[in-house]
Each structure stands twice: as structure tokens, then as C-alpha cells.
Image (cartoon, rainbow, N blue to C red):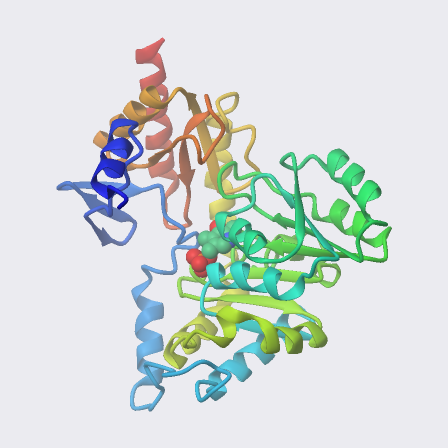
Length: 387
Ligand SMILES: *Cc1c(COP(=O)(O)O)cnc(C)c1O
């Protein structure tokens, strides 16, 4: 028998025990251990999840409708309500792509798409820092895989030139805005690399970019003008879009193939049509949130400048690392900031490389410039105290 109690004590001893936090939400504030703090760890990047006006408008709109609260089935059986087809049609039209497919979550998308599309003649080449769900998707599939150093396209090009003739198909996988460092992929360079070969598919996960980047919020691919050139463009609805689920933009053939082969799509009950309706309600408004995107960009710049040389220079987005170094001082700094009213969390190895324990700030558009300045003052005050 495995002694799970023993395993837990081991986790406790090494400071890696995780707990479900006891928290309460109030707009941009979070309450934890009886303390009310500004939330600097949220994925609600546009601040839409706490907007009562949007919520009320949506509830008003569905009042009296018979929209189901459950799909009661996989879409392949009896769960394919008209809300899905309508929303997928809107997605493909908005992105200007042949087809769109909606999934229950980003985790479903990333663990399902790759295993369905690969075979033993496929090589997956993934950035070293891609999300755990992508790693799981790679491990579930039958393809060989290689990782390239984070955003090191020189190394990627070398792997591609060595391997492209050995495999029938290569799939290059990256995120657009990276979740830990907040830096971004050079999508244009990846697109031009892909175009130099005949057998490369490009897979991009925009989980942290959709809603936030691009003139109408369609993501970094929109901002960099390459939506058409990314074979498999994935994004999620659980972060900036304040809902749940994920999407893939792809060709009609790939969509049809996934409907036939993708296990998390086939063997899991589809999201409730009500949830799809809420997602669509917000997605339709995405182009209107320009002020939110601009404000988020402005406060992000403030924090990046304030943390220049301490991690701020790494980021190119609203996710900003403050690299403290060793684990214990990092945890203490996070606790100090929490005591000052700023809810931010330490990220330690193995999530990030050893010796780069950091506080990860994840900003949202509901944070005012005044609050941002207060955080920066608290950060400066702390470093004066230490040095
Ligand atoms: C959050 C995240 C996911 C998972 O999406 P969910 O909808 O939360 O399951 C996938 N990829 C990346 C890069 C993410 O940050």
C-alpha cells in the first residue's frame, strides 16, 4: 500500500504542500484569513467577471427563455444544442477562419487535440515553458517530442532542419503570452519558419492573450497580423472572457477529424448551453473593451518599469514576474505584501527554475492607477528595508 499520509508529510516538510485556499471575492478584492486585499493574482484580466452591469444585462436577456442549464450529454450524442453551432459560426466568422470548435476547457483542448492529430510519424516540438495541459497532451499522444529552450528560435530552427525529413509531420507548439514570465512568442518568426517547410503545423495557445491583445481582443495573433497562418489557434474562455470553455480555430477538415477522434470532446458531457450563451454574450462585446485593454496595458507598463532589473524587464504583458531568488525570502516577501493589502502569490521551483523563486503579478483592468502606485510604493519600501 502507498502511505499517502507519509507522502503528504514529505510535501509539508519540503514546503510544497498545497491547500485549497479559503477565500471570498468582492469585486477586485479578495478576502483570505480575515484580511481584505487587492487581488493581484486574478485571471479576470479585463475585470469582466465582477461586472454586475454585464451580468444583469445577460440575466435580463435570458429571462423567460428555456435555455438549458445542462447539455446532459456529449455533443456527439444528444448534447449538441443549437447554441454551439451558432457560437462556432460566430467564432469562425470573427477570426476569419474556416472552422471553429468549442471545448469544455483549455485543459480539455490541450489534452485532446494533440493526441488526436498525431501518429508515430509525427514529431512535436514544444517550447520548454508551455502549460501543463499541453505537456499532458503531448504525453497522451503517440508522437515523439522534443522541447526547445524557451523562445530560443535558433535552437528550434536547428531541430526542425535536422528532423523535418525524418518525420512525415512536425507540430511546433507554443503559447503566445507565457503564463509564468509574461513574455511573448515571436509568432511572425514562427510563421515564417513554418512556411519554409511543407510538413509543419503551428499550434498556438492564446489562453493569456485572448481578450487582452489585438485591436478587437482576438489575441496576439490578431495584434501581429497572423491569425490566418496559425494552423491550430487555441484560446480559452475562463480567463479574460470571464466564462468557461475553450476554442480552436482550424481548417474544416481538421475540425471534422477532431469530431471523429478527439476523446475529451467525444467522451465528456458538453458545457451547458447557458454557459455558451454567456460566453457568446461577452465575446460579442470583446471589440468594445478597448478602454479596458488600454488601461491594463498602461498599468502593466508602470509595474514593469518599477520592477526593471528584478523581472519586470522579462515581461511584455500584464503578467509580471518579480524574481526574488531563493524560496524562503520569496515567500516572506509575498506574505509582507499581503499584510500590506496586496494579494500576490509566490511561485517556486519546480514550477519555475531553481533559484528564480518569484512573485507573479497578474494584473487586471479593474485595478486603478492609484492602486498600482500604492503597490509600487510597497515594493520599494520593502527593498529599502532589506538592503
Ligand atoms: C489556464 C490555461 C489553460 C487551461 O485552460 P482552462 O480553461 O482553465 O482549463 C491552458 N493553457 C494555458 C496556457 C493556460 O494558461
